Amino acid sequence: MPIGLTYKQAKALAPCESRFKAAVDKLGGAKKWSAREISAADARQAGCSFDDVAWAASAIARTNPDIERRLRLWLADCAARVLPIYEKAGKSSAPREAIVAARQFARGETSDAARAAARAAAGAAAQDWQFTRLCERLSDDEPADLPLP
Image (cartoon, rainbow, N blue to C red):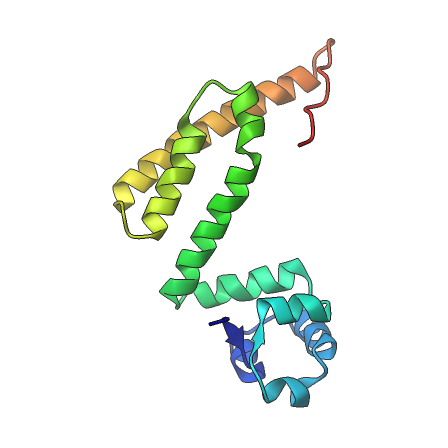
């Protein structure tokens, strides 16, 4: 079952007025929207931005554990998509372990402590890679661009 918002529910999230007005206009106006729930796919098809849909999902997630779980899994998917880039250059398995831990946590398969430990390790590894790459870019022997997938 798709997850959607009515006009009234979206308004109750206290969105930025100008962004909300633009979204309402793209969705055919308040009167047309108020008669039905708008899903993320509907909003996208109508021309609403990624930022608007992500903001609404994040706002809902504050009080809806199912949406919070889905967002955690989506964030893990985003990280998994770029993991091969990191693994080509990095030596740590921490980012992969953090993605696994995030997915397990979202599904209720691990504890807060285990997730926090994996997150800290991945953050440290990612920051180390970023710092190394920055130093390489700012050196006399600038490195080649990383390949695009």
